[in-house]
Image 1 (cartoon, rainbow, N blue to C red):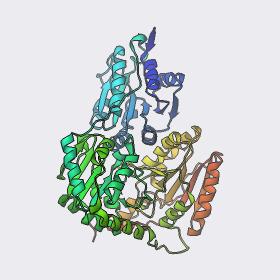
Image 2: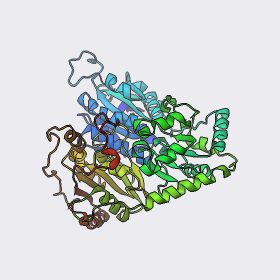
Image 3: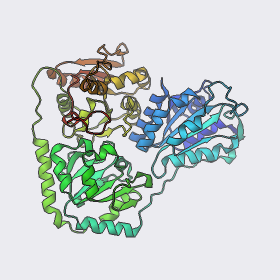
Length: 556
């Protein structure tokens, strides 16, 4: 019995529980055809970068492998931004690309020949060019295992055009379901960390993006209750902890609520789980973190911030947290600290949000109304532009119990959230998917609105319209420059499709009605574009003093 390389790839992906592949296939369409013959749904995007973003959104919201299939040359270079995002978010992602045939490879005279391996190698866990048909078995097995094992990440394999149709002996290729083992930090390090935690009077917990990938996320809540101190999440860690929990104090670093800064300063021990502690996570906290005892937990040594002193526990976060509270030793010494945190949390939530009544729409008003109107099964997908960063500031935006969030990495790739929402809508078809995006990001994505609709996906896009590229224009105004980045023309919205509805909001008193209408459209099987017209100066308070080489505070 013989099979082609393309047939083998399709069968292997099926064995690894892959039911959907995103991409823009090579001209011969042969791999796409084999995937469809195996029952794998192929989502043909209009742009390779969007396709990778969609695969990332799918992987982050399904805990499965994201797979993207593309052509060669510029098709691969178009994937680089997505790969950068995938690497930064530690997403299990497999890119399968076409490549120049073996007879001509290296001569640089073939159509669309490019040094693809060299382009992608710095930002993937593993890259490989298939050298012969017989090796496809171990190559695919290794690619999938490395993408999923340890700290997940993108991997890349390319199939020379002439090898894809080569036949191999099928009986020698057996793909088994993937088994991923968990590992634990050494007992002595865990014991040292446990002693520090029990001795601490004012501990603090920071949850990074890796916390969302724990096999047992409930262990985080149990640990937080045992620890008894404030809980912060980084932007990418949002959704790993119940934001209605009395110990939750908001997002870390740049997005930390001003009322909570003193809790960080007063803490005597900081424990971080699954965070790289990059610039935005430490922004405004740098001096505090340099002066504190810190315990970092990560599944990969590359995740540790080695500029910070303290214990570094390598292993699965869930297993380590369980070991750290082994025996549930008493925590009477932190009762006062626990009560102080809960009191501060109540004060923060109860504090009135000062918003001018009536008149032009304010983003804070929009978020307040979204909290009231959107159901508990909502999944928010975020961008990272000027106005949509309002949603990073707790409690302006607070996840209700049961809600989740997909957030860009520190790369903040423009258009990520708009495209990733397509993958999220496919993975979470039983939930309400709401993407909060700027109009600059949405413009990059617009061509793939038809991809969303053709797949039967549903998303409510809340488009904050300030003219496009608002962050650049905001900086430009303080530099006395011309308005080079603003385009106040109406968005070219594709509202003629019967599966898509459009709502425009200009005034504050229109928001509630607009959201109710959007949910009705959504319930009827439609996607919705809510164009929210906002002022360029409507900026979150902490961002008003940031200028230039973000995230450095320069303007006084």
